[in-house]
Length: 146
Image 1 (cartoon, rainbow, N blue to C red):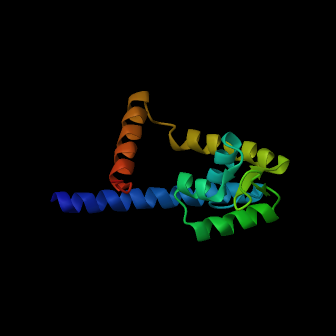
Image 2 (image 1 turned 90 degrees about the vertical axis):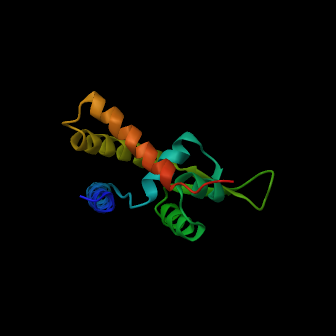
Image 3 (image 1 turned 45 degrees about the vertical axis):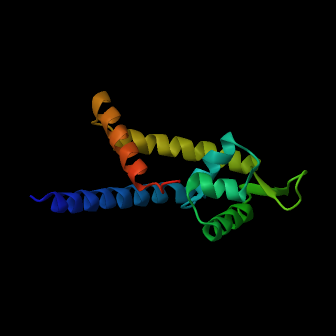
């Protein structure tokens, strides 16, 4: 098999796994009122409250327009609040509400169960190798800063 064909096959497998992962996660999250794109924001804000929209977008690799829609939906669902920065009134800081903290915990539990299922037959060595390979793919795909 040519290397180019092998790359294509690997890429297709990676795409299928990513789609399956998203389908399972989205189906599990919907009943608890958390929707696609929201978990990374919940997790980020639980560790770093008060980030600006720009900081959130940069951290999770989401375009400004997409992030605006996500944050509006989260605000409507009372998962977050946006507050004006006390030092720079042009900036809005984003914080989790009490409900947002609760949903973050529920989401973490659901994902932990899902991840346990996903990696059930992996040895410690396989997990370490898989993580290293994913990190390598991420480095290859990240935009190069000059």
